[in-house]
Length: 218
View 1 (cartoon, rainbow, N blue to C red):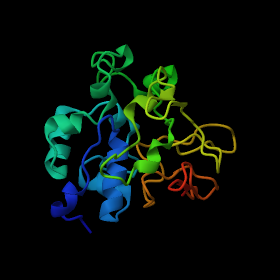
View 2: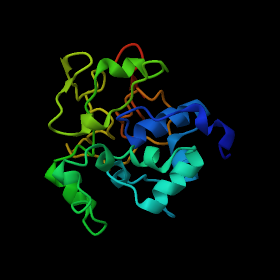
View 3: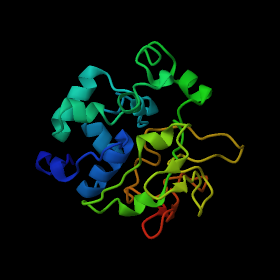
């Protein structure tokens, strides 16, 4: 079932918000799985159900315009959801460095951008407050960012319930990262602030709160 276009304006991008954060908030308001929303706006490949984490960094112009049209955003609003638009002065996010021919795995392995997980702050506790709306911030993905200027505290990186890195698919029993996705556990409709790490061999998402009272391992 496709979401009604009339409801897409129920979520507006928050300054410094990541693309997956915006999609999680919108999917939650529409009461659909993030994967279905990603499919509707053109983020899924023709085969498979993995949303490429490359979209976290940049979107090509055609896809940006397509997403903007469906989500009723301006092209600039849609582009601003990417890390490349938020930190244009950071060399590893420069367009020349993120050229289409450059393997995404190279960006992941170099570690200049946290593509497999995100740090977080208790700001996420305000994610439902439209007057002081918070989000999964783009700057939390950059290694030079280590503190929240709003709360004057260091950022956290692990879910206190399951111990997995926040906003990640988790680490498997062999100690290796599970395959990355733009949104971990995309078939699960959870609150946008909840941990989405998988804590069992069956792909179940952790549902315990990471930032009380909202967070919970899915």
